[in-house]
Amino acid sequence: MIIKRTKSHIAEIFCNVLCVFVITVVSVNAQKLNDDFFSPKSRLSFGNYLFLEKDYLRASNEYKEFLKTDNNDTVRFKLSESFLRIGRYEEAANNFKSLFFSTSLTDEARLGLFKSLFFEKNFVRFRQYRLEENYTTEKFSHDIDRLNYISYFFDSEPLPDSSRLFSAFADLNRADIKKFYYMKKNPDTKNPVTAALLSAAIPGLGKIYTGEIGDGITSLITTGLLVFLSANNFRHDHNFRGWLFAGFAALAYGGNIYGSAASAQIYNAGVKFNFDNEVKLFFEKHNYFLPEFDFVNR
Amino acid sequence: MKKFFLIIFFSAIVSSAQTDWVKWNAVQVSYEMKNNNELEQSVGFWASLQSAYKFLISDHDGDNCPFYPSCSQFYVEAVNNSGFVKGTLMFADRFTRDLNFFKGWKHYPVHCKTGKFFDPPYNYNLNPRSIQFLSAENSSE
Image (tube, rainbow over all chains, first blue to last red; front, side):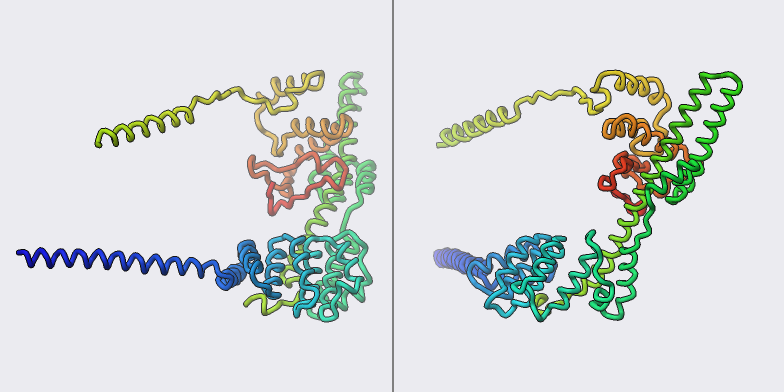
């Protein structure tokens, strides 16, 4: 009996010691894992993973933490690229600038700066930097020139010479570029003054000119009917009703002239909206004809 | 010993309960409906005319206008933003478009909250910069 109790007592002690040992080992390892988790190497690996998953905001945070302890041009480039892709153009441009000198990625960084300015739609600075030697790069001069030509499709500046613009693109895409060029140069817009004058001549004609055929015919019928009612009432000596309908007719006539000019402006806004959308989709599909860097997607 | 723990336990509960009581103090809520209609807040001939229209015609006629904002609201906004003469011309044009015998409203974007055709007055004040074009295919307003 005593031997049995002693045996169970020993077993209990053994179990307790084993438990303490296991807990200690697990805790120590957990602590060790925790340390590794936030090491620069882990942060870089995690940042690269997030970058490939297109989670650029969190990737940029990991890269920033990594760059606190280590200096690496590729990581700084990827940090700039992350900022660029999440629309933080100012930060992207500053980080690209920091790679301009004494690095192997100087040409890529210069192109990156121009990309930042382009996507920020800061075309004035883009064209200004393009003329300064400090910012240009021989290696990507053709890409920067092409990006400059593309920028003219997105702002209100006059288009550059067509032959130089077309020559910046490959034969395969030249037909599309030509189409956009001529759409931009000679947009299919309507003149608000012409629309107003047409409606002044014949009520509703200005609306028909801007494509609002139903509105135009309705205006013609309404104004005609009100003029008829006014004239008819005057003819039968119903002067009050005559003046009343004359007032309504004048209102419909004036409103139609005004509305035709407004309709032409809305039509033009629609033309611009559709053109901008079409151009944007085309260039986005072709990634703005920019080169891809393999080292970024590793 | 047990008594000691019980006293501590109850004191903690009582003090927490007191804290909770303070935290959940009754809040004074006002159920007064705010009038966001600028029209009714203003006074004078214009406001009287609008109130009369609303009371005598609009409330009885119902919500029939295919557009958002409705023609009357369009007129009010147009006059407030562009003046009486321009606003009246804008309204005359809108009224003809509303009257469209062919129901040719398909090119207007659809207002998602009301399901009506979206046609705001700021698109008609002859200022190209104020035009916010919305395609009928991808209405987002």
